[in-house]
Length: 313
Image (cartoon, rainbow, N blue to C red):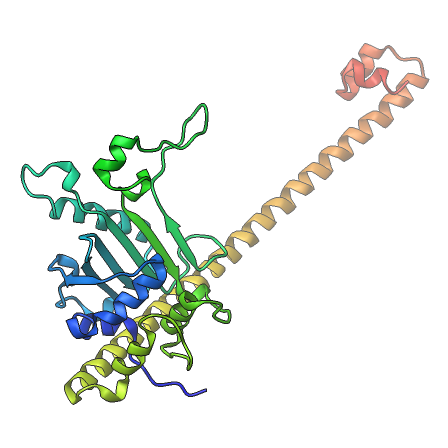
């Protein structure tokens, strides 16, 4: 099976996919993911689309508007970020505000779809693709709130969750299977930077032709190699920091374990001593009882309670 050496998808988003001639690649990915034929109208100017950021950050954003006027954020994130889920929320919220004109009626707020392609373990779950929407569920009857007929005409949809932002998370590293469908073929490409012969996924044939490393200009090739070196350096630093932190944690855990072990040992010694004193007192109480001593005197002598001595009879 012949495979071509292709550039990383996040670098292509920064340098190649902003060109209208290459929109077909992004349209293919979005069409396969959303299950409908997506046409990109334009790449929008936004803070996300600035190309002046630090290339070592392993993060690329792209904001597009489709032919229906909906906004789609596409973000590739390679390195682990602890608060990434909140960043997704901030991104969609900021877009709503940024694309509202003063005095604009709320009905004009654009639909937003947030596509997040991550190369780290985000959250806990067994799947490699997750979809998030907003639903309103009754606290008493547990039914889902739906739009009225009039509201359906106003919003041009039958479902409330189609009004609010939608989120897609592709956890690339979790994909370790043979592609079962065209969307899987896209995720396989995102993970391996290779397109299999015979693919039927929209946009992938175009990706294989236009993202071919050998077709880059000399200047693009230098840029790509420099960025690739930065990505690798950053990943190496993060891996080193993680390993150092892991070793430090193990060492600290070892120290705590030793200290706790000593403490438990001392507690056991003390407990054993107390048990032995108690047993001696009981043996003495038994002897006193056989000699006919008064139970109150025995209690004073041994420190045992009346009940404890009575149970020895």
